[in-house]
Length: 435
Image (cartoon, rainbow, N blue to C red; front, side, top):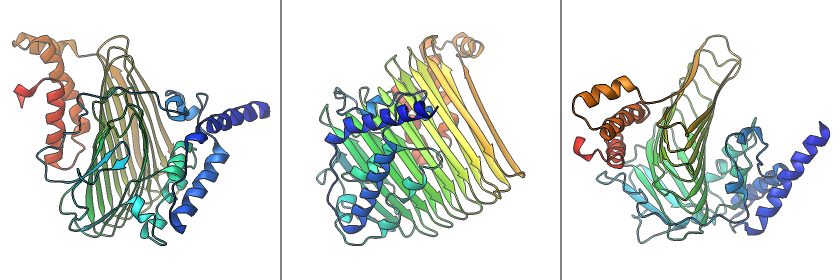
């Protein structure tokens, strides 16, 4: 057994050695340089994930660990126009570089916004207490070396501090013009006591992209997040979101993934204050045997009377693969926890597959926790009902797909943003006439 562990460790170190020549640590002030060097040290100790890692059982990490990204053809429809008509502050990154000409001024009532590249040059900054700290905490009990790689080598990102109620959502648009761009971005968000902010994200960032977002939500504060990862079929995208919640705080995140060759979204949440609420939801529309999408969630309850929800819906067709790994950990003393988890897939053919690993680990006795996972085909009776009323078969199927995804979309609190996501799904399903 010891020999086997040594062999696995060596393989991880070999994977890191192959990737490191292309990595370069950015220059910065004392605070961020210390955080980056700490992350690099942790990365050196861990190595990079390999296919035999249990945590990567259903998704090959090769796309994210290879020395260079696989060339990805540019998409004709990048899917970045989801929130057209919504009043937002827009920030654009193109191939991982901030695009000042395409962005709005970084000024918004109730919020302080700057680039990570600028904040990193300061000798001292409020982000010091967050940058890399939540990512470090998220390495236990599961190692996440690609998140540590991001902390060590991220070149830019946003640094956001909400001091009141943000006047409007902040919309981060990721665009790419290169078929070989290799993007590493890191965002730091602090929502102070009683404050609230909404972050929107659209697009795929690069041919290969690794993004990390660290969020602290103070007592009675609220953070809302809605993301559409774009119809960029060839891109390879890895995201990590780490969040820590205070008392009576709210965290809600929704992600729409329409295709994409390789996508893995990880969300690691700590509920550390009593009466905190955390909802994480996702909807996948995957079409094609080359499409692989993975949602991996880890929620830790470490306070009294907290609520968490995980709602994930995946529609899979023509050989696509969907993965869900979701865990709720209830620590000793986290009484009156309400933890809910559901993952469901709709398989539109016999070649697609849904791989699920739901988990509960509970060390408190006064809790209400549940999880469920189902997979099935289109309801033939419902399909017949629609067709009997003159609805063509393809449109009937698309209407059922829309209804299936709606439960996840309903997790978005803002009606305006919820409708924006539904409009985009309808358009992609060619159901514009039913708006």
